[in-house]
Length: 121
Image (cartoon, rainbow, N blue to C red; front, side, top):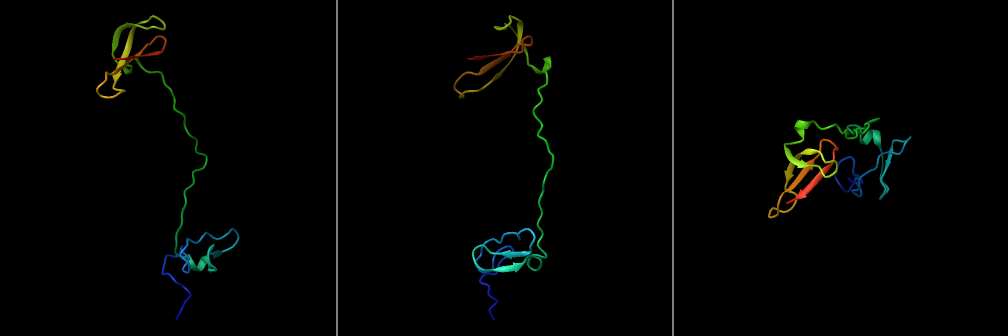
C-alpha cells in the first residue's frame, strides 16, 4: 500500500521531497510545497502543531542618561594643576591600557572645568 510519501517526517516538512513547508497564504488554508506538487490542508495536517510569536509594540529605546558624577565617585585627589583652567587638585584613576610590559595610564579629571587629561607612563 503506497501512500505517496517518501519520508516519515514532522508535519512541517514535505513528505515527498523533504523541504520545509511554507505557511498558508493569506485567505487560504492550503499548504503547497514549493519544490514538488505536494498539497495539503493546514487545518487537517497541522491541527495539533502549536506556533507562537512574540511581538513587542511601542517599545522605545532608552538613551544613556549622563548624570553629574559625585565628588566621592571621582577617585582620590592629587596635588596637580589642570592644564585647561589652572584648578589645583585633580581626581585620578589608573588603568592598564597597553600591554603588560608597558606602564599604566593615568587619567586625571578636573572637577572645575570637567575636562580629562591622560598621562601615559
